[in-house]
Image (cartoon, rainbow, N blue to C red; front, top):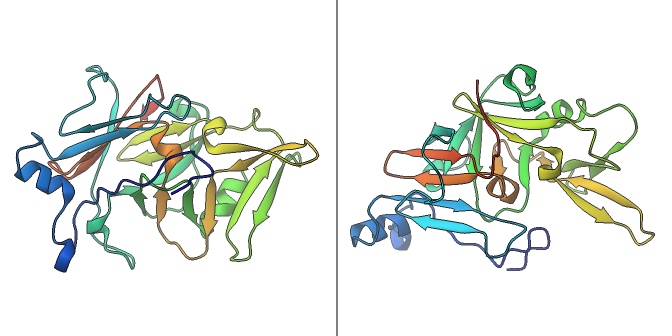
Length: 245
């Protein structure tokens, strides 16, 4: 599969569980069953700048992660909505925040209820429920540097002519803020007349009541999929910021 955004070669599927019939097994469970891994977990980090820098570990923690690094975690979600969350690596996102990379400067800015977040290693963009669009867009500077993008399916996003003046975004799981700078969530586009703008990597969909975290997330944090303890864990990598709130 060709990925025109990330340059990835394809999708490697490692679901949590599968249903009945011919999908009655899990790759992770089978590796563990045949003593090929010591624990039922794997971890992923994608290095978008260095093609040899991406890492995946099976059955162990990443060796380059030192003890004492901040670790955020969340419990699996097993129900809700119109989707079987047992088949996905899914957690609850409590809210989205914005500000600078200090806990006191982040402000809550999302709906008051929890949102289910699916961690899909093969997704280029992050897809958010449409009701969160205004909460994102109203936080942008009122200087006409950003504008709305809308496709035929009424899926929304936005683009900006500059991003260096934007605040950081944060996603909160189980009391931890995982932070993203604007450069992590925008992709640069150049028009034929050489004008440049930046497209937000989050799309707001009228059809999805859950959130799918894609490549931008895995390029920012080392993500551990831990079936042994029914958790997902996120580890700071290259001084990426995790804030305990």
